[in-house]
Length: 75
Image: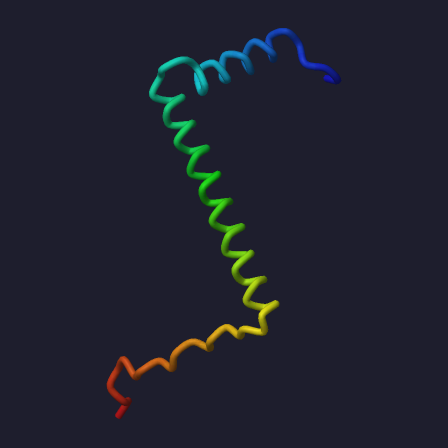
């Protein structure tokens, strides 16, 4: 149980080829998924940088606006 046999490596290789193989729809999907993750991480980093810059400049985050009554009073 310590090491992987040749069959384990062949299965792993087959999965990698199916997911990232040449020209298939799955490889395109995986590429688009990776681009989405990179974009998400970039936007999160930009958000963190803007919040840190605001904190350094002494800026304060505005409190949320007061909620208006959305239902009629009870009774």
